Image (cartoon, rainbow over all chains, first blue to last red):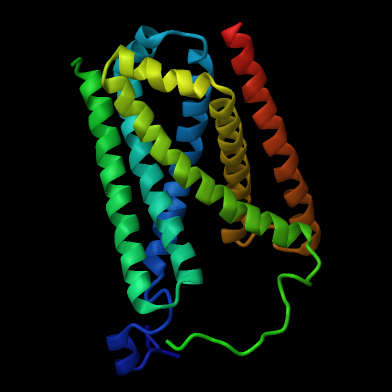
Length: 129
Length: 129
């Protein structure tokens, strides 16, 4: 086959197939996964190091510039990966078109809102409310 | 779509569980658990940004038996999903897809997840004491 896209014009227009268009999704999932490996290892190690410490110690840690940056990156990668993963689950189990749209919209909204909320919380601590 | 009311032959109920299928399902299940955990992560950050009293309230819940149990489940889910995720990334590189390596890496993932979870918790307990 020499054509890049072997779908018929009608197929392309209607976007048939449960995932519609998967390549970008697939790459984004892998890229966010690769980012999450070091970020989560750092995060877990940091939490263990902070264990038993008090509120002030936690705030001081969050206010360190490197921590602030890595926490923001962590949230971005985490919610990207989470939303993509949940979308795959929706595609696998929800077949009603209406329910699927509602589910995906909810997942996208929640993921984005939670990421923004988390980043704003981190920044408000970092810049010392 | 009309609801399917025809009887179907048993599949999930009758197919013998194997390491491959169990680990695959666990990857999805831990992914869902981690998604729920990510909500708690943001709540935790917002609590920290809201000041010491609010943070203390959340910390009290996390120190309770229920809170600790949830954290334990979350850390195991994290390490399992992380290790199995790395296994997936190797597969994406078309590496280790033969049955022998799949079983070997599968058991390695289970062992590593348990080991990492126990190490993290023992380290955390040592830090607190």
